[in-house]
Figure 1 (cartoon, rainbow, N blue to C red):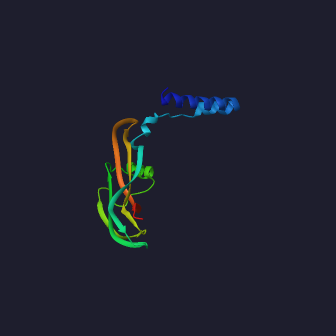
Figure 2: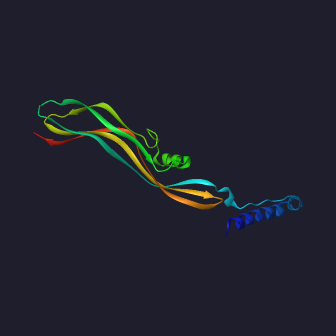
Length: 179
């Protein structure tokens, strides 16, 4: 059933309801009122973003194995860095808003920009261990479809891929015990 027929059916049911509840008023409405019904497709113009997938991952920017052969814990500090970037194959504002909503957070830098951020990171190395120390960027990757509509007709479909950093992380784990 077309949208026009559905709309016509709804209007007809509404007028029939009025006739049952108040026949005089319903007769005046049907005689004195001009009802303009436009196809719903005319209202559908512009872009639409349809989300498909999203994933989160860590992009390592620093890795070091620290060995502590003493009986006391040891603190070490390293200068670490990570890449901050945003890539998205669309500049349509509806799509940009859609991928941000899909991921749940925004961009650290503008689309197409890549920067290196550096900071000092302290790690505590347990006694008698070899410990892996790492740091880097928290990232997300989203995919979706961007549709362009004109007069209710789908004119263009484009696969969208976005990938960007949204924060930093640091982590450590023991690789080996010496005692």
